[in-house]
Length: 255
Image 1 (tube, rainbow, N blue to C red):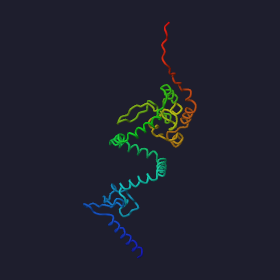
Image 2: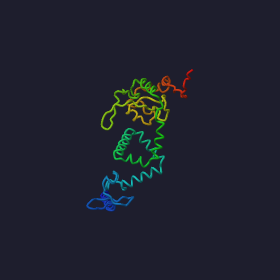
Image 3: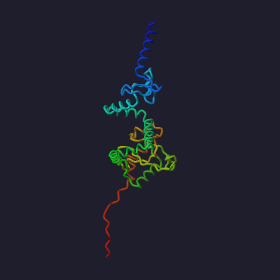
Image 4: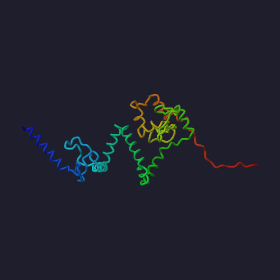
């Protein structure tokens, strides 16, 4: 009898809480947000799912208030927020990176990316200045020597240059191998440059060489790993071309 009484009281509390939070507006069930106090349709379009809330399976705050609350927390707890992001990215880096790419693609298609660039010219200028150090300062002869050293293949996965196709605007295009920084924050000379296909270049991103290219990587091979290390430590030296001397042009005197 006690159990039945407890269950009955529990159901009554649920009913009272639901009546307090919900209201029928234009024949549609609406829920009151605990933060902004406004009534919104009690669907997953306006509220996040909450499996612990057995009354309506929804959060007490609407999505807009949840997002604002999360932004404010991230602003007030920057260090913890960054640490959480680093941890999540490390554990699910491929999934998160794909989500970032898809979101960026959607923003570009909607024109939001271009609009943001136009409204944030100062940030774009700073970004471009920071990106300048990513350009390799090597001449054509040095790059050709680097390609020959790696047999005209991607240093990481071994894809041949003649097989390096990339999807661009719905069609496959043959592209040349890219100059890739082995050390993301390292030098821009030949000692830090290997040829890479677009796929490997994108996947490596800002990761440390040993962190990304190891036995857990499906593209890894000990032979390629040793060859890259040998190149960046020693062999690149024999292919460096000294810069041409700059001087004033002088005419020969005719005697």
